[in-house]
Image 1: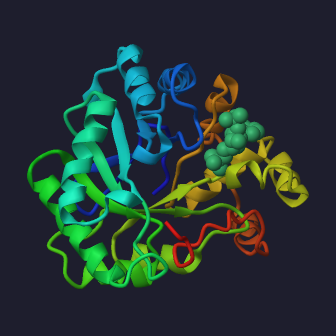
Image 2: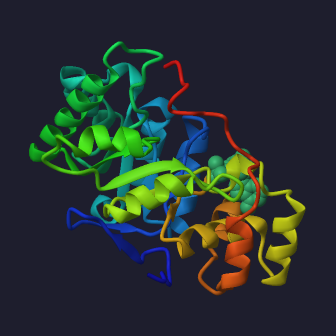
Amino acid sequence: MSPKSLTDVFKLNDGFSIPCVGFGTWQTPEGDVAVQAVKDALAAGYRHIDTAFAYYNEKGVGQGIKESGIPREEIFITTKLWNTERGYEKTLASLPQSLKNLGVEYVDLYLIHWPANDKVYDNPVEVNVATWKAMEKLQKDGLVRSIGTSNFLGPHLEQILGVCDVKPAVDQIEFHPGYPQFEAVKFCQERGIQVEAWSPLGCGRVLDDERLKALAAKYGKTVAQLCVRWALQLDVLPLPKSTKAERIQSNAQVFDFEISEEDMKTINELPEFGYSTFSPYELEF
Ligand code: A2P
């Protein structure tokens, strides 16, 4: 697909649609900053906001949405289940807290933030499956529209795909030039799971790269715009974060240029750099 504006959508495997660029809020401070950032994003035309219980800014995000004056149903809201709340019962109990924080009756997308792994659990597969079963129940109960995962790689997704009634609609992973995780992207795309990119700007770490600067200059664009566009051209949904109105606007101005096949290949093949070092296999929480 070749999206033409912020409100163009990717179709999810459950029939719902998701606006093709989301506004990221990881590390956006709770309170006035979160409220203002979300209002700035909505004013700039974003209609998809990504938060998480563990970002501790759900209240500000919800407040920003309310103060924007845009009807809630016109905004796609994602939040995520935090790691301490894994398992069937705790998952069921956790979403209502996020809904309360956000001040909404449902979220458009609910994600398991990180897979359970064997650094923390004796039975991580069982935990992931139980958590997923609760996600299915929340969907059935109408509290969430779509359900998915975050930071799940192929082997984690296989744990769920083997036993689920509803397959994940989305998987959100770290994805940016220098760390595109193409193996996981291919795994998802072959199975109809929409990939979302967290830290599409490498959390700022890739923005000073001279190779990317040279490519961006060729198109008269910033490196941030190049990163967002590059993700879109690979059918990956970028979630750029900023707290500055000017950057929020500029990061979304990605529909008036196209990265050539040759330049896509150059970016795809950059050696690893800018990696967060957050591995779902190694994380101890
Ligand atoms: P700030 O919030 O101060 O603008 P990512 O989306 O990959 O997680 O990257 C977010 C980081 O990149 C934040 O530190 C953000 O800082 C910074 N950032 C976002 N947009 C831009 C931009 N257009 N130019 C420079 N830095 C940016």
